[in-house]
Amino acid sequence: MRFSRLLIPTTKETPNDATLASHIYLIRGGFIQSVGGSGLYNFLPLGKKILDKVRAVVKEELDKAGCQEVSLSFVTPAALWEESGRLEKYGKELLRFKDRKNNDFILGPTHEEMMVNMVRQSVKSYKQLPLNLYQINLKFRDEIRPRFGLMRGREFLMKDGYSFHASTEDLQREFALMEETYKKIFTRLGLEFRVVDADSGAIGGSGSKEFMVLADSGEDTIVVCPDCEYGANIEAAVAQSKSYDASTEIKVVTMKALYDEGVTEIVEFVLEESELLEEVKACNSINANDLVDVENPNTVDRRMIDNNLKECTVYENPEYADISAVQEGDACTRCGGALHYSKGIEAGHIFQLGTQYSEPLAANFLDENGKAQPMVMGTYGIGVSRLLAGIIEQNHDDKGCVWTKESAPFDLQIIISNIKDEAQVALGEKLYAAMLEKGVDVLLDERKDRFGAKMKDYELIGVPHAVVIGKKLADGVVEFIIRDGMKKEEVSALAIADLLLERF
Ligand code: ATP
Ligand code: MG
Image 1 (cartoon, rainbow, N blue to C red):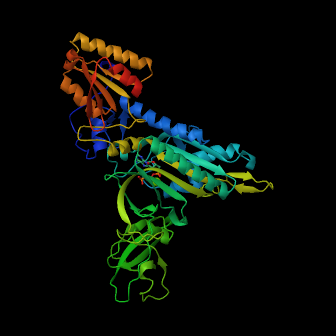
Image 2 (cartoon, protein in one colour; image 1 turned 135 degrees about the vertical axis):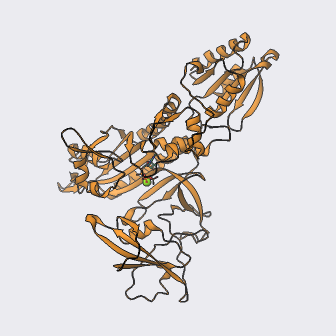
Image 3 (cartoon, rainbow, N blue to C red; image 1 turned 180 degrees about the vertical axis):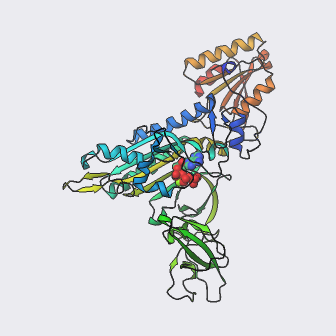
């Protein structure tokens, strides 16, 4: 590609709502453009190119693992969500609307119902199972606080996959395969990540794992053990129980619990004074859908006491559960190591659903004995557009982006310093043609601009390698640059073509 022909509107201006490096550089580098309202973005040519590259890595690895790509309608009939019971439960994040005939629709924030609906119409027998179907498509969630650019948009690109099985054992086999496949995807994209236990709702267990891209800017706190493999989202993390004695100070956190069909309860959560209530664990402990703050309630319907207080409470018929947040320094349940916190960006999530959707939606198959059974399901998501932000959070410097090999918009950038210099232009064009011939994805910066501006754009856009053809060409020398660390090396103009051919 020729820079002069491309729409790459780079800018020096930092958008005023941007604090994260990825948000700033994706806008400043002309990859994406904010669309009026928050959480909506256009992808400009470079952004779209990267999105397609990331998407291709995801697709290649999933296809290798035997998954099949489909594409589901984005506009979803609300009736399907009524069948699953989610229409009522899903709050304001769900965008609901009517068509001209007054039919109710939603914009899909996730597609379990739609995929189950596709499968229940065509799969009738155990002989047609297992199946793993996925799509890489838009999602819409009317997030309460869209922020950080592509990290938490309202419209975003997700890979969502769903598997269907005749047994729980077969689901577990597929779940392990997806974990391995996701590891390959994240590794190929050049990311530093950790697979952690995630909240599985009231069902509990280890049927849910998140893929966390490690970054200080991440919104999730993860608990990791330095001495073994243990890692968990703080929402699901466990530690060895601590025993407090009878003189321990306690505290009570009172909250309103929300259940199905508008049922509510006032619940007291009791913890040791220095402990913090972990709301997701607390919510699961009473099988509620959600917990909200409540002021001065005049009754208490239920009391849940933290496991750590087992040896010292004085209540009658006490109910106990693990409701406190793991703290740094707590002991790992597997090896006793001192747990510590780290920050992560949730970029993927895999979940063993069981029959949670197939039962209400009557997605049944006939087993070997001719008996009808609900299909056993798994669900697997990757935030494809969020990954672009994750890659930059991990790979940038104070000048701009440093794209990883498989995510880079180009493999190589050739920069002609002064396009009035015929020798520089001649060499640039010759190298450009040779690289194209070899199938290298190359960007030739042959713009009329000043050299300084071209270098600033190079650093901002973050192509992994560059060749600068400048004044020193008169002495037979050009410069080879590695963007990561801006390492520069002088190379003979005669040898540069061979060096590039060797590298790419
Ligand atoms: P979060 O906790 O960050 O809100 P989630 O747990 O609600 O995410 P899932 O329902 O598990 O998200 O969706 C699968 C994947 O989609 C997530 O792992 C994440 O990478 C991505 N994702 C979710 N919400 C957004 C969003 N608002 N913008 C961009 N990507 C998102
Ligand atoms: Mg999730």
